[in-house]
Amino acid sequence: MVDIAAEPRDLPIIDTRPQWFGHPAQLARLFTTELWERFGFYGMRALLVLYLTQHFIFNDRVGSGMYGAYMSLVYLTPFIGGLLADRYLGSKRAVKFGALVMSAGYLMLCFGGDTAQPFATFDGVRHPVTIAATADGSDGQFVTDAGQRLQIKGRDDGAVDLLAADGTPARTIPKAEFSSDAVRSPFYVALMLVALSLIVIGNGFFKPNISTMVGSLYAKGDQRRDAGFTIFYMGINLGSLGSQILCPFLAVAFGWWAGFGLAALGMLVAWALIQFDGGRLAGYGEVPAAAGPDRSRLIYLLSIAAVVVPWLLFSNTLDAPAPVEGQGIAGYLLALPVLGKALFLTFIVGLPAILVWSYRAGSKAEFQMMLAAMVLIVFNVTFWTLFEQAGSSLTLFADRNTNLSVFGLFSISAGQTQFFNALFIVLLAPLFSAMWTRLAARGLEPGIPVKFGIALIGVGLGFLFLVLGTTFAGPDYKVGLWWLAGLYLIHSMAELCISPVGLSMITKLSIARIVGMMMGVWFLSISVAQYVGGIVAQVASVETVGGEVTNLSVSLATYAGVFQTIGIASAIIGGVLLLLSPFLKRWMHGVR
Image 1 (cartoon, rainbow, N blue to C red):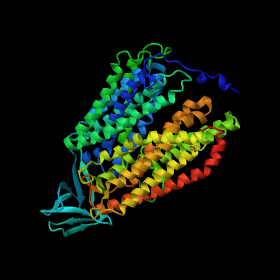
Image 2: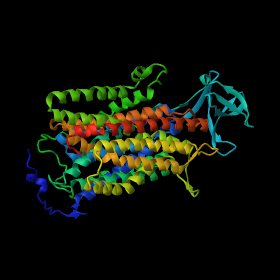
Image 3: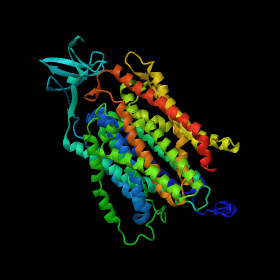
Image 4: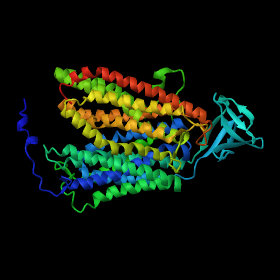
């Protein structure tokens, strides 16, 4: 048994370095760097699905699938970037390289060419589609048929009415005989995929290593470490809060290039803060002593060359055919793009394999702790699958079926609605921290499984709250903005129950020999969740022409139906976890 009293953490640690709010002064530089990196990342994220569906005019299925694929890769590459930094580069050089590569990716997104040209196909003929104002002032889609300008109007059964100038149907086209798409520049589509690939590669170097540098500021046993990371992670929410307001605003006011350009600028600021640190970070995140010969240039070149890997995965996702109905779950999985197959196969095979190894190699207690960790990892996938609808289906819902007016004074854009989450996290995080502390002092703080269960119920209730709001939609089939804000409030409270404890839980429950691998499994679970989140958003797909919905009534009903289903499912799954929590608590052997 370890003598706890003899561990260094109980000894007073005297830090003679310059301080910043009671922490090493270097934390201020890293905090600001993270703020600006997250400014760029979340600013771009707020625009991505809208950019795909409104500029390149991909349908909802393709746009949501691409968004899910991008976010899943964002959570996979940090594992590789962390290994390369630990062995060869050092955290500091990895962070600077990642910042420059990400900035190049954001900058490349500024060059998207002209908006794709939409068309509709019926009677075996391709008809160009134009977007123009209708009689009620809203945007409508028009085609010319037999010399007559007709408005496209979707029907509840999926058929399409072509309306004459007086609003009466000139003709009705059955669902099976009408389709729409757009003419896109292959060059600019390829450029967009290269840009996303660069961001994925750059994020792999930046994300894990900036956190490593924060950890290196504190000596072993320094009790300020957790508080330091709390301050550091506040930079994430402050950065995302600012960018999710400004980047969508610039995109609407000046064009997509302006929104992505601001994201690129944010990343350049992050790079500059590390590159020109004035010696403040000297001795932190340096090249490992056992690194051997300098391999940095080779690593940089190979990393840039590796852009072809995510590019191929994105291309495969883009070209993947829609699943055929009636083939069941097996047929659906077989129809997935390569990335989807790889993620599901790794996750489905990897988790049982690790448990089998744990059963053979560990004690009974260690196996039970690993089993508890695996159960929580599976429930973690469910939470993030639904929570991350923010960047896909919820953003499209905001664009199509939400009245974005703020008290009738001004309106925000659909992309800006994502700022609600960051705002509520900034406001609520101190309150939740104080609440957990007080409950812990009284011995009433819920355990990790209970917090996970509450989070799942919360994310479900958020969707059900929005579904309730759809019953109050006006004649324009739009709900008030505050129903969407209410969803984000509930989701933010749910996030504060699960997000801060995940990584800590993994380190405490894992067998010591495989903690690193289990951390990889944790991020793999989030990656799988991001991908599955794209699939869920595809289920909520709405038929569009020229990037615009042809029937807002059908759109509202579709979103309400999907949100109700996943809301009820999430609440039930959370309830199941609460029922399992006594068993999990026993298996965790005192870990809290």
